[in-house]
Amino acid sequence: MTDTGSFGGITLRLVTFSNPGQTAQRVGAFIDNDTNIVDLAAAAVLATPSGDMSAFASMLALIDAGPAALDLARKLCTTDVEEAVIARSAVRLAAPLPNPRRLRDCACFLQHLRNAREIRHTRLAAREADPEAALERYRAAGALDVPPEWVAAPVYLNSNHLSIIGPEDDAVWPHGARRMDYELEWAMVTGRSGTDIPAANAADHIFGYTIFNDISARDIQAIEIRSGAGMGGPGKDFDAGNVFGPCIVTADEVSDPYNLNMRARINGEEWSRGNTSMMDHRFDGVLAHLSHNQTIHAGEVFGSGTVPSGCGLEHNRYLEDGDVIELDVESLGVLTTRIVKPADWRDRESPDKN
Image (cartoon, rainbow, N blue to C red):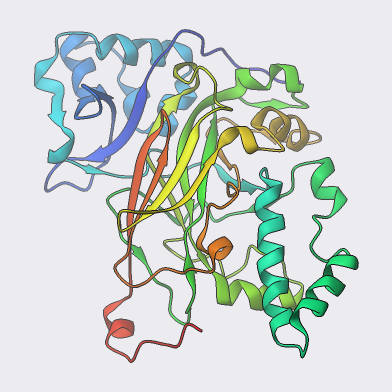
């Protein structure tokens, strides 16, 4: 087993941002109840002009630099470097880790899967002469049950780590999709590399946590499921499919990561509510299972899967053009995303969603 470092005693809410009129991204940390940001590279120059600033070149560089760099970042947030402090409202926030080394989404909340199967088979049953009898037939055949393999160990899909957007980006509705949906998730970011990681030591490999909106085109996904291709194809794999933010909260700041309230609001109306305690597979188990026979690298992201009730599919409600999605996870902040149709799509007659 490989092992590279420790992260004890550091409390940070880390962001990636760009200054007005600039495209270059910078690494910072929220202060003042997330209303201001310390530009860590600028603060380091002011505090130690002759020091090595390479750790603050990007979030991935900061993760790779290890505990000493995080200790410095924490110190900079409590140092008088007023010239390096900028209002959050004056910058553009990107995804906190725009370029993870890998992105996987895990099925950690099994009740969500049961709920989704109930919805799907209720729809199928509605096409038959006796819907109630048809649904009971599906139930008796085990079609609504989660496969035992999913109960025994966390299942995951490989998501596109090149298609990530942040809290200031619009999620662009993919062409051809009719039923668009949000997914209320949270995610773990790794800070240490390791192979065959024992579950008892897995927490030492967690750099921090963030909020994840795994946007899905449900009608396209349904075709993929019927074809046997699984759930990770075009129904989830499009340019604005993975939304992260607003920050990465370092693991030590979250006293009990498995007791965080989770809520989703659409245009201010609450659609979803859950808690991280509902996870059947926790992140320590995910790391232990997935690191068997393969190396987990620092700077990877693992999504939790959807909390029960945490998507429109489970309520048979779907997003409309211009809807604003707010995912609120206790201690991690609020991730806000607007979903919009491209102009050439919006100008057409709206497709039937029924």
